[in-house]
Length: 243
Length: 191
Length: 191
Image 1 (cartoon, chains in turn cyan, blue, orange):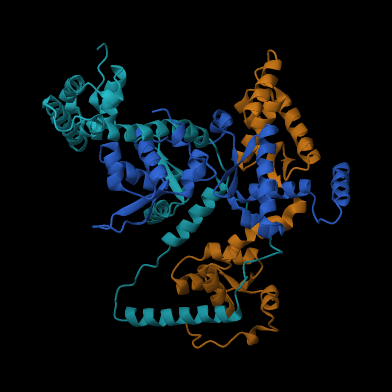
Image 2 (cartoon, one colour):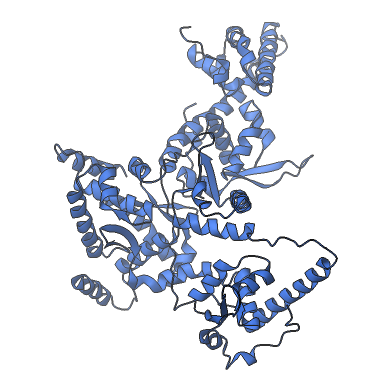
C-alpha cells in the first residue's frame, strides 16, 4: 500500500469490511471468507491507535470472521443436500445480512450529506421588535388586583426578611446585580447586536462581582439554549450567538 | 409611490367579493415571515389573515416557487407545515463576510450514519442502532440529542424499558425536508 | 429548481467581462440586508461585493423601486446613506397580531412589583424601590417611564437630591381610577 489506511479511519468493523469488499471487488453475497479474514486481520494490527471502546468492536468482528472461516471448513451435513437449505446453512448468511443492512444506512447517510450542506449555509434572522408606545400592551391582562397582590407579597416578604435579619449583627451587602436582571440585559443585547462578544457585555461593569454575575447569566442562557458561545482561540474573546 | 398605491387599489377593486386579492395576501405573508424571523405555522398565518388553512398552504407553496423563480436573495423554507425565511445557501460566502464567520460544523460520518438509522427506523432503541452500525453509538447519539436533531420519544415495553429515539422538527429543517415522507426512498438505493 | 439554476447560469454567462450580473447582485444584496437586520451602509456592501460605491448606490435605489413596484411585503428604507429592510406600514395591523403575543407576557414580574411599590408608596425614590425589592430596578423603571405609566414627580430634600417617582394620569386612566385614593386597600403600608 502506498499510503497507510488506518483503522481509525473506519467507523466500525462493518465500515472496514465494506472497504475491503470494495477494494478487492468481492461479491458481497459470496464473500471469500478466508481472504477477507486475512485482510481484516492485517488492519487489526493497527488497533493500538483506537480507543478501547471501538477496539473491542473490531476484535469481536475478527473473532466472528475466524468462527465463520472455521465453520466453512467443516464438511457439510450430507442429510441437507437440497438447494433450498444450503443458503440458510451458509455460515456467512447472518454476517452478509448485517452488512447489507448497514450498507443501506451508510448509503442514506451519503445522500443526507449534500442535503445538510445546503441547509447549513442558510442564515435566518431575528424577530422584529415593534416599539409602539401608543398601542401599549405592557399592562395587558394586569388588573388593579394584581398590583395590590404584588404589593402585599412584597410587604409580606419584607416582614419575613426583617424578622430573619433582626438577630444578625452584620449588615448584609445589598445585592446590586442579579443574574435575572443580567439575563434580561444579555437577551436585549444579543437581540440588538448580531455579533456580540463577552467583553462588550462587561464594559462599564462596576466591579468584579458584576462581571461574575454577567458570566453566570451567560452560562444560564447557554443552559436555556437561547445562546451559543465559542472562542476562536484560547483566552480569545467569547463570541455570543443567539440560537 | 402614488402610482404603486394606485395599482394596489385597482387590483383590490378588481377582485369582487373576496376581501383580499392574492397579490396582497402574498405581500402580507411576506411581511409576516420577515417580521417573525422564526418559523410560522399555517395556523398562525390563517389566524392572522382569517383565511382558510388549505388556502394559506397553497399560497405559501406558491410563494416558495415565486421566490425561487425570481432569484430572490431570500428563500422560504418549509418543514413540518411551518414556514421560515432564510438566505440562500449559494450566497453564504457574502453573508459570512458580513456576519461573524461562524461556520457551522457539519455532522460527522458516524453522526450521519446514526441519524439515518434513527430517521428510517424510528422509534428505535440505542441497542438496535449499535447492532446495525456494529459499534457503540452512545457518544454520537448524545451529540445528536444536544443538536436537537434527535429526541427521546418514549420507552420500549421490554425488559429495562429502553429509551426510544426519534427525529425532531429540527431534523426536518436541518436536512431541508418538509416531512419524513420526503426522506430518500430506500428502494431507490442500489445495494 | 433545475430550471431556475439554468436561468441563473444563463444570465451569468450572458454577462461578459463583469463577474456578476445585476440580477445576481440584487439577489445577494437582498440576502445581506435580510441577514444583517441592521442598517447597512453603501461602504459595507461595496466592500463585501467588491463593487464601486456609486454602483452599489444605484442598485440599491433601483431595488427600493423594484420592491415597491412588485408590491413586496418587505421594503427597503434608506436613511443617512444606510439601507435597511422593514415591513410595510400598511401591513402593521397584521404584523401586530403576529408580534404582540410575545409581549403579551405583559408586565414582567419585576415590572409588576415595581409599579406596585410606586403606586402605593409614591412619591418614592429609586433607592427605596431598590431597597424594597432587594435588586436594582433601573431598567424596569426606565421601561415604565417610557410607557408613561410612571413619571418624575419632584426631588427629595436629601443628599444628592434623588428623583421622586410617582404614577401618571395615564396610569389612572388605564385602570379607570378617579384618583389614587381608589387604589385597592393593602394590608401593610409599612415596608
